[in-house]
Structures are given as structure tokens and as C-alpha cells.
Length: 248
Image (tube, rainbow, N blue to C red):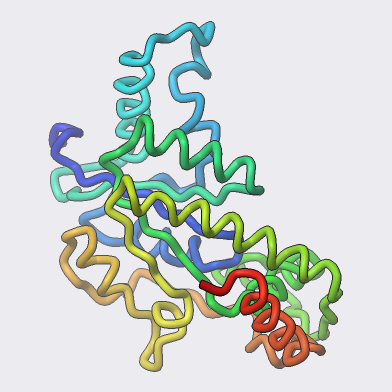
């Protein structure tokens, strides 16, 4: 096992249903990567060693302790082939997102950030609603009876979701001022014409550009147009809202 200081450290961030899990397992399966199987909570970064103490740690203890914890957990199965270790974190709301970015800027400036962005928020929201309705969350856990029913998105709830999502994404993007950050577009990476393309991510982490043959899963959900009954109307709503409220 190499010294932990020799590993490249990365963190996958994004909103729920933005492709973070697919990227997480694409990296986890790479022969030169070691990663925790599950995602970590925001408190892992914000609390660090204070989770195990009386919370009276000085700044140096918190800084060094946070890095040691990251290496110990992310690199739990590291070996002589390991070049990069990493984690995935998906903050639940705007406050959690702000807490996370503050902690990362203060205690983890060396992390390379992979930020997943799904341009089609209509599909992202629909995917979340569908998963909550059917219980079919991940493509590698195939349901016995896949649902073929359609869903209809609520206009008011979707508008609230759009606003919250854009605010969270904008907060996560502030990490580009403090970290080496790669924005990965869901549609270009996971919906590429010839199949998922992880080459940009592998290059970002200085990893050999291998075909991800270790990913043996298929998408659970059909294309969003097929299961979101009012997909086109909600997509127009999203585009109008974005232009009127967040145009730059």
C-alpha cells in the first residue's frame, strides 16, 4: 500500500438523479481507483473528527484530522495499483450545500471536484418522482416487475424544484474558485451516442482511459418523454423560468 499522501483525492458532487451514482461506480470499478461503496453525508466534511470528540478541536487538528479520515475511509481497500481515492456526496438542500462548500474550501482544498450537471431538469425531476413512486432507484437493481405507468408533473412543485436546484448548483459551482473542478454534463457523458463516455473524467484524474466493462447495468427508466405525460409542457416551463430568472 502506498502512502496516502501519494494518492489523488476526488469528490463527486451533484443533485439527486443527476448521474452521480453512475459516475461513482464507473470510477469505483477502475483498477486504479479505490472508493467507498456508499455515499457520504455532508457532516463527514463539516464535522470531521469532531464527530468522535467533545468538539473542542483546534483548527490544525480539524484540518489534519479531516484529511486523515478521508484517506482512511476512501482508501479502505487501496492496494499497490491505486492511484486515486474518492467519494460521492449529494447534499439534500441549500443549507446542506452551503455547509458542504464552506467545509470543502476550509479543510479540503486539494480535492479534485467532479460536478455532475443534468441540463434537462425536467427529466431529472421526473426521474426522482418516478423513483419515489415505483421504488426503482438504481439500474443495477433490476425490479421484478418494471413499472410502465406514466406520471404527471405538478407545475407548482416543479417550479419550486427548479428554483431550489439552480440555487444549489450555483452554490456548488463556487468551488471552481477554490478547487480544480470538472463539470460533467449528464447528457454528454451518460447518453453519448456510442454509450457512456468516461474518458474526460479519467483524464481529469490522470487515470488510464479504459473501457468501463465493469459496469453491467442498463437504465431502469425509459426516455422521459415516454413516462412523463406532460414532459413537453414542463420542459417549456423550465426554459422560460430559467431565461426570466437566471439569465446572465
